[in-house]
Amino acid sequence: MTTDKAYKSHKPGSRKSKVHEAFDKKGSEVAWTLGIKLKLKEGTLRSWFGAWQRDKASKPAKKSPTKKPTLKITAAGNATTLAS
Image 1 (cartoon, rainbow, N blue to C red):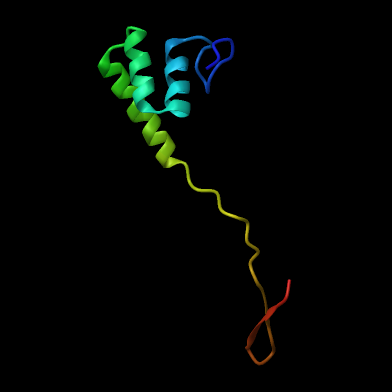
Image 2 (cartoon, rainbow, N blue to C red; image 1 turned 90 degrees about the vertical axis):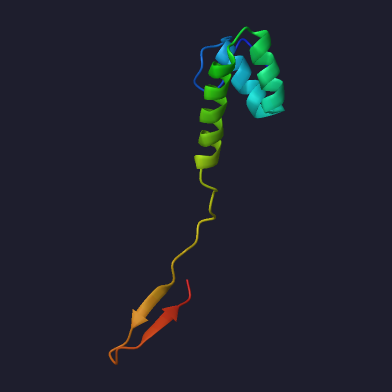
C-alpha cells in the first residue's frame, strides 16, 4: 500500500484511501482489521464495504467488439449476407 499517492478518488494518505486499497488488493477481512486499527467505526466500514461491493458488481464485463454482418437485398426481396 502506498500513502503518498491517492487511491481511486480519495485524498492521498486518508484512512478511506488506505482501507479501500486494502479492500481491493488484500480482501475485506484485512481491510476490516486495518479500519478498526485506524479507529474507524464498524458502521462506517460496513457502509464503505457495501458501496465498494456494489460498485464492483455493477461494472459490466468487457465484450469483444463484433462486427455486424452486411446484408444485401436483391430485387426479388431476398437478403444475402456479404463477407466482411
